[in-house]
Image (cartoon, rainbow, N blue to C red):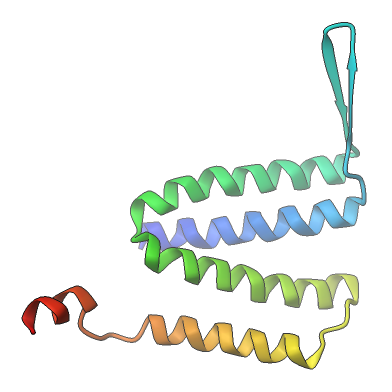
Amino acid sequence: MKKYILVIFYIVLYIAGLVLLKFGGNTGSLEFENDSFIFSMNLISLIGFISYILSFLLFTNIIVKFDLSYIMPISSGLVQVITLISGFVIFNEQIKVKGIIGAIIVILGIIIMNLKNKNLKNELINE
């Protein structure tokens, strides 16, 4: 159960990072002066950037705890659907019919992947 909480936390950090980066509207600036560099970004974008980086660090932990072929499609699919919804709700972005159909297909894929069936490896070994 603990590892599923990590996945939820990863998704929340990832989406928060994306939303805050877009909301902040500042990609930051990077300047090099006198053998050093200066990176500047507004506070909202900076919080989004930190959230996004933390989500990446958390994901590196998650892929160790799960089968990669299981967690990657599920987490990516959930992130895509939640990003679509966030864009609509927060930024009033339009969702086209293709976007809705795609989200439904992603959700169906996640459901199908989680159906309790024999493991494919076991099926191949037993044949």
